[in-house]
Image (tube, helix red, strand yellow):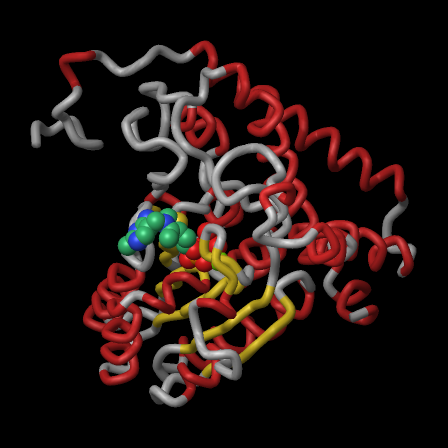
Length: 330
Ligand SMILES: Cc1ncc(C[n+]2csc(CCOP(=O)(O)OP(=O)(O)O)c2C)c(N)n1
Ligand SMILES: [Mg+2]
């Protein structure tokens, strides 16, 4: 990994910036949530940032991404507009879904972020449909679906993988296995000895497992897979193991509830993907601590501006309630 950092400093810093942007944005959301101005549910991605940052840094702007209820990280890492995301969470008309969608319904088609929805597994067939359209248009784009381990328990997941394999579609499936679906551990939802990626391999889809907190490792693995996908070899599936730090939905910690132990949480917190990369960068002396702090400060300034923009923006007009994103009545 040391050589990677020295040889790919620009990419390393891009990965760091993306993870830091996601972390600081969500910290600000968590700090301000109790003000009651963000009225939608928010599912924070804190702890899982390495996956969105690495995968979206491999992807091109012209590639497609779809996501889930926990989509801030994917939206931002794909280059989604920060101001429009915060305004959306504030329910303002300047938001990316005109203030009608909230945190779980983000979209920025200009950068290939094709949308997130709250139905578990709901965007996976959409990614496959986008993959089919890419194949019909004969371009070398990729369609990528991010989803959690809970989506593996939805029937539509199997139909989607099957169709993508059958038609050799350019789809990248990214399963973020954070061990839980709300309060239920994988142990009470799936057989003990099941390895998700192996099961998917059995469906004829090339699959790999990886450490979801090691951003450089994810980057390298996904890069090799996208090379194959762009060659027309069909879909690829990744299972990345990681952990969400905060409660399933909301700005707080919930280790007091008893569905997971404090020890487990501390184990994962010590494996903070951002601290890990920062340490690697400093160890290689490629840039100084001072320069890293400067990057963080400039990100924070951007975030503060986005919150000001959201606060100052107007709410949607009552008469526009039945209009879609394009101003048409539905
Ligand atoms: C079809 C469907 N069933 C149930 C829910 C309620 N629900 C919302 S999020 C969630 C957990 C999903 O877990 P996972 O896919 O692992 O994602 P994570 O929250 O861990 O990121 C559930 C069950 C839903 N939104 N949609
Ligand atoms: Mg999960």
